[in-house]
Amino acid sequence: MSENKTPRTPMNQVDPRRWAALVVVLVASFMDAVDVTVVHIALPDIQAETGASTAQVQWITGGYALAFALGLITGGRLGDLFGRRKIFLLGVAGFTLTSLVCGIATGPEVLLAGRIAQGAMAALMVPQVLSIIHVTFPERERGKVFGIYGSVMALGTLAGPLVGALLVEGDLFGLGWRPIFLVNLPLGVAGLIAGALLIGESKAERAARLDGVGVVLATAGLLALVLPLTQGRELGWPAWTWASMAASVPVLGAFVAWERRLARRGGSPLVELSLFTRRGFAGGQGAQLLFGLASGVFFLAWTLYLQMGLGWSPLKAGLSGMPLSVAMMAGAGLSMQVLVPRFGRLVLQTGGLLAAAGMVLFVGLAGHYGAGIALWQTIVPLIPMGLGMGMIIAPLTDLILAEVPHEHAGSASGLTNTTTQLGQAIGVALSSVVFFDRLGHGGPAEQAQRMPHAFSGSLWYVAAAFAATCAVLFALPRAAGAGKPDAAGPNRARDADPVPVG
Image (cartoon, rainbow, N blue to C red; front, side):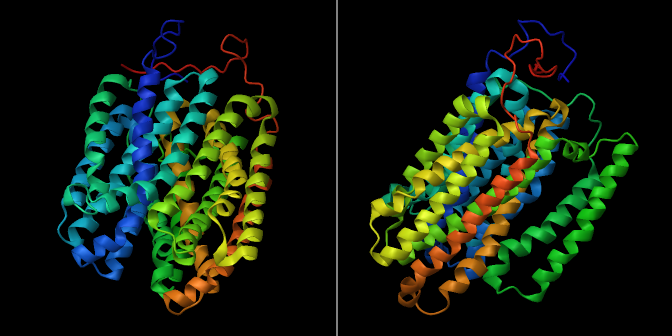
């Protein structure tokens, strides 16, 4: 359905500012993607200067991820209700302000509070990106746009450690680690100005008010699940972590029951459960979960392998990941522009198998060469992995949202982001078994000797997750994404061309 009641004509079917608006929302996505990983490189310097305890250091990274994951569904729905541009700009403003708080923090308590608040602001900002794209671009252009989006996210995720290394080692103006946060200030201010000028407003036409009970139940259930997954490994999996995860099941069950009841009564639920009756949406969420799990295991083990096992500097480790980012961008562009329109679901499944093959190749190289592996040998398996990941991530986002009515775009976007975050949390938790158990205890020298064995062992699980993603993708229609009618075609979807408000 359209976002307002303006008649559809060739002149008002699309927003002429949409490509400029895309740049704005993609810069915001890049900021968030970088910020998730940029802190890891700076943690030793942060701890030395602020005197943070080990637990506080863990929460400086984990607190952001937790607040982000908990707020995504609610943040997406707020955009549906009150305007996606409005909530996006609120999120950008809050993200910029909390970045300033983190950058000037003199103690670990202020830094920790700033990071948690920063994650909450990102949860307002990030879901609007996909929903703004969904309602701003006509169907004929979304494939290209989501290909660009996937490329930017791939670049941001892998650029984080490199940007962090450059800023920390560069010691700009003698500020040490602080520029990793302060660099967000000029980007945030520019994003606010450009967003206000270029992004058209849109919101759901019939959503009445925020589902307060749903927010409480969803937040409580996700907190009970994600908190132990985020912190359990560092704490040694005490009894409360298992009890918390068990308690999340009835709480999330109560959330589903409430959402169904509210929908039957004609209310405005936080999550439109009817979306799961759509094959593409339901299958896509399962694939997102497995994709996040594979990413969570790989990137943690890979980073430690390069720095602890091979003794590489943070800068060298960051640079070694750039070919993976380039391959992901190439895979995303190729799949969206050429392959998916012709071959549909098969392209995504091929991507899963290609990524799994890259992991098997890495197992062979790491096992054969051990600590003597060369830089180019660590890059070779990243090429098929990156191509495969790119072939999945960009079209999958498009396929998940393709059948979603515009009035539920924010909710669906928030749910999709939450699924990925949950998968990554599970992946990090699984690392305690598949990676850290193999690594064992002992000093840095002892662990460095065992690192190739631990890393190789964990890659089998990453390969299995990619293969499972390929299997789950059978839930998508065979021709998903293929043969989309042209803009002028007679079978054009009724809501394919959005009409933004304002």
